[in-house]
Image (tube, rainbow, N blue to C red; front, top):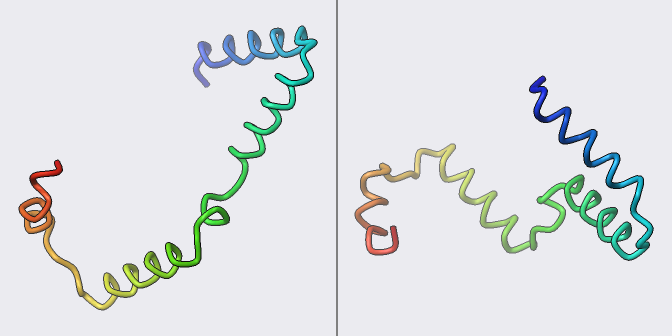
Length: 77
């Protein structure tokens, strides 16, 4: 593993052990919990249905080439 990342982890642990602000600690815990959660759980049912339909379309060969999509959306790219 990269030594740089190990040094950063140690620095964070040292900093974390010195924190006295309970609000900041709660924010860090919330951040950790969000990072551990699965994005699928936060996805709406409509979005899940759209993703599933897209996957079915792809499995059934109902896809367009990338070049065609680029032409269609080039003004936004």
